View 1 (cartoon, rainbow, N blue to C red):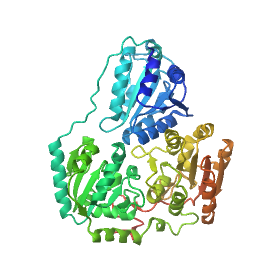
View 2 (cartoon, helix red, strand yellow):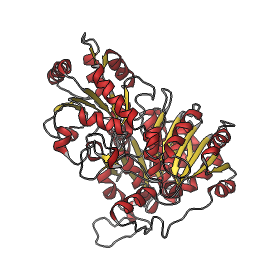
View 3 (tube, rainbow, N blue to C red):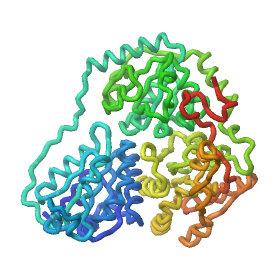
View 4 (cartoon, rainbow, N blue to C red):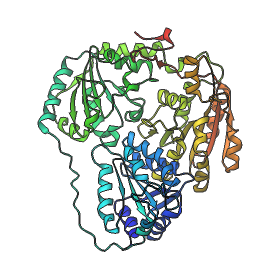
Amino acid sequence: MKVTTYIARFLKDKGIDTVFELQGGMITRIIDAIHHDGGIKIVSMHHEQAAAMAADAYGRITNKPGIALATSGPGATNLLTGIGNCYFDSVPAIFITGQVNIDEQKGDLSTRQIGFQETDIVSMAMPVTKAAYAIKTANEIPQVFDEAYHTALSGRPGPVLIDIPMNIQNEEIEFLEPKVFDSCQEFDSTLLQTFIQDYFIALRSSKRPLILVGRGIRSSGTVKQFLGFLQKYQVPVVTSLLGLDVLHYQHPQRIGFIGTYGNRWANYALGSCDLLLVLGSRLDLRQTGSDIPSFQNGKVIYHVDIDEAELNNRIKNCTILKSNLSNFFASIENLRNNYTTPVYWLNEINEKKQARLDTKELENIAGINPNVFIHKLSQASKQAKVFTADVGNNQMWSSQSLEVNENQLFLTSGGMGAMGYALPAAIGACITMGNVPVLAIAGDGGFQINIQELQTIARNKLPIKIVILNNHCLGMIRQFQDAYFDSCYQSTVWGYNAPDFTKIASGYGIDSFAISKPEEIETGLAKLWKDPELTFLLEVSLDIHTNVFPKTMFGSPITKMEPEEQTNK
């Protein structure tokens, strides 16, 4: 069969039902084959970066590789931000790029380029992929696709890239070698049992235990097992940015979101615990703060991760276990241990919470309080199956205050921190889940990066609700300029502006409404959800000096947050 037909059938055989792309000359044959072979929905985006981010959402939701295709040259390079997003956030994906014909490639010649749009995307993508393949013969295709699929899913998930010359796409595969891929992850059961035994010994003597969870819980498919673990062992839980939706907002053991802009009381718990179990989360700078001795002081840390490079990385002397979380939970499922956290520890955390709620951090600002708004938005958005957040102030307000319930997911760009993520991710999420209502939250800056995807939403009649928190500037950097650059607002306020988003929405045939006062919130939310099946854009105008608080002070412990007078010591 032809290479292109093989690709179409391979994807279909793996249960891939959707691909995202922006058409171009070097992938025309592949897209044509997918179309004619049938069984896979082809979603045409308006920028390759958006196609990559939509595929990212598909991968996060299904735990199967998201698929995005792009042509050679600028099409391929436009994928790179989305590829990096998958790489840093452990999202399985396969990116397929077209390449110029073999006889048009420069090979080892010193010339910069021979074929039109010839670009060595494989070399560019290698640092942000688990593997990148430059196809040279048709008969490589079966082995490469099989290997790529399993590589994307095995160990710590991530993206792979396959670059296929145009002439090879049109060739026949002469033979298909059967290949058996061993996807079993080896682990040392003795080390696992020792780790578990040591942890429970430490837990029994702990006075202030805590669990930190990240996206590894979802990517390993162990949310149910984790919830069972919590029911048996009554230990409080804080979440990373990407672990926000592991526990629903009302779960009795959920404390809150930690990090540079985390909930003040959650950071207090993280900094003050004496025993910390880390499951599927990196202990990176934004989680621990830069003062490592302060973070480690008085606590014992047990860390489980599938990626050995993340263990005892920044934070040393942890008790570590390289293991898939499914192995970890399976090994403790039948243990008869139990534990109840001391009431005084829970009361201590709750006292810190009640002393300074997230809605009180900005209580003296003019206009709409974004934390108050996000709570109300959550309560009005029970029909949304997925929240997506962009990057910037909107992401932090969302993370601090979203009330994600047990039937909802939260998707955002973590390690890459890519502005422009919310809108294409909402498209990917909506289509992946069968055109269910999805809510995208963005700032005015990030929204403009992939604003063209409003046409994708309109064309496909997707029930995506869009909320733009418009603070009329690039707010997170503007806040940084206030703190460290004497309020010199170059390129955040000066030399920056945004359009009337309601007029933009109208141009795409999308209904919209704008609010700017607290008393307008209820009206705006009612219009947003009047018809759950229709696209709607709500623009929320905020005062330009609306900050994100609390914020960990630079160089300080994770518990020392500004405004300084509100610091929990």
